[in-house]
Image (cartoon, rainbow, N blue to C red; front, top):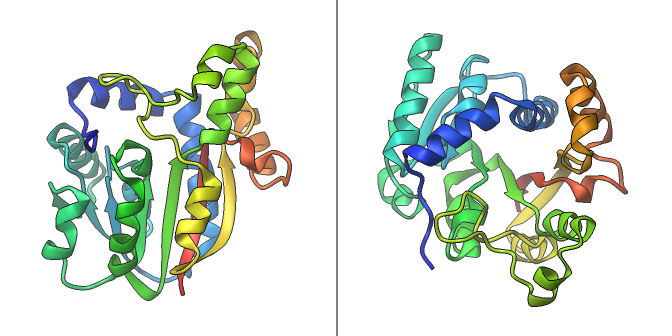
Length: 249
């Protein structure tokens, strides 16, 4: 298995996701968490695996200095266009995470690593690099595809044969992540170098709703309820993605 980078098909898929409720909920939760955690001053921000740049653009519009690193040219070009249309400046690097320490000279106040771990051949290998890229008094915003939620969704669907085989990875050309992340394993891997300061679930109930109820629900109500329940002790761990904000030890 190798790291998965994205092509034109994946880019169009990502644009579709961000045009609907799933993307809107994801952005709302990530933005709310960061707005609570970050100080009210300009920061140097690195977005690792920046994709189409949705989160980076939101931060740029709030006065932060942004560097986007993305290995897939179609994704990076989409981010460039998004920034240009918004009249925002940024530094764009077409590079995988393995090359970043050789290209970036100083650590950043805030490092974003959203929806990256689950596409890597060895997710734990990126963690020491993220630590070196983050300033000692900085923040790491880590969002990842939650293996627990994938198991729960398969339980609800009655996919018991799949669960018995413990086959959770997406197929080679699938847009389902290839390495769902076990949150307990990740917490153990982070423990020596990071303090996890906040945890939120992203889409803690939306994806479990019957489709007829999803269709009826207003987006404003979905966002309100997702934000209200993202840190509920019983619901946070059900998020299809989990968002952890970490500080270096």
